[in-house]
Amino acid sequence: MSKLAIIGGTGLSQMQGLSINSTENLDTPFGTPSAPYVLGSINGKEIVFLARHGNPHTIPPHKINYRANIWGLKQLGVSEIIAVAAVGGITSEMAPAHIAIPDQIIDYSYGREHTFFADDLENVTHIDFTFPYTQTLRSRLIKAAAQQNIVITETGTYGSTQGPRLESSAEIIRMERDGCDLVGMTGMPEAALAKELNIDYATIAVVANWAAGKSEGEISMDEIELHVKNGMLNVTKLLSAFLS
Ligand code: HPA
Image 1 (cartoon, rainbow, N blue to C red):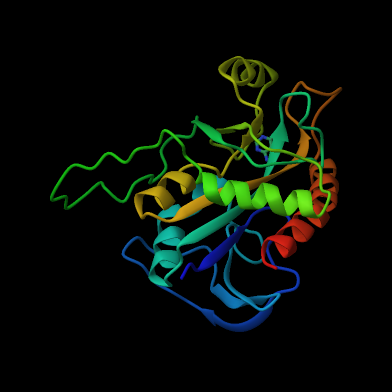
Image 2: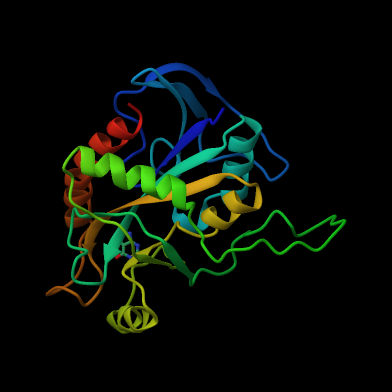
């Protein structure tokens, strides 16, 4: 039987509607995860919830121990992960508060512990990453959105930057030329690590702001918070439909 985890990002440090059974503090060979794992149920379905940035939100994207987070989920028997992530919108459909279910990734991050296959190897391992997100999980999310009449974009390329600063407008122009629709700071190495451990993985991307240079003026944290809050209302609806 599959076991589902939700990794909550900015604006989702706690899971609404989750009736909590227990919390687990785990240690892993790669260090300590971002927060205790919260075990509980939504609509009667068992899930594990993890706050990617800690709860409260204190860990910046480049300091997250992605390996510990994913390893801990595997230890708990998790076989599917839905990652919720706030992003900047690059292409025209990706307006603030919009939701997309990306199907591709370009990794611009650097200096992060990004693989379980680094040390003590019996064999050099290269996972296939042609399709970084699990198609079946993506399809189920898209179906749940349709059931709730939530307008989403069903595809998109997620460009994963290093952060914690936002991008320059020239970087966004380059990313658009590369084919990115969305820009975020936590998509990688999370997706690849899940794949290395054979865990199905899909992302619900919530647009927090127009990416740098895509609107007048500068990007403010107030603006990001406001749009994430609005977008999260639909994320909660979507997840609830997904779990029913
Ligand atoms: N860039 C990178 N990450 C983000 C952004 C952005 O504009 N907005 C929310 N996360």
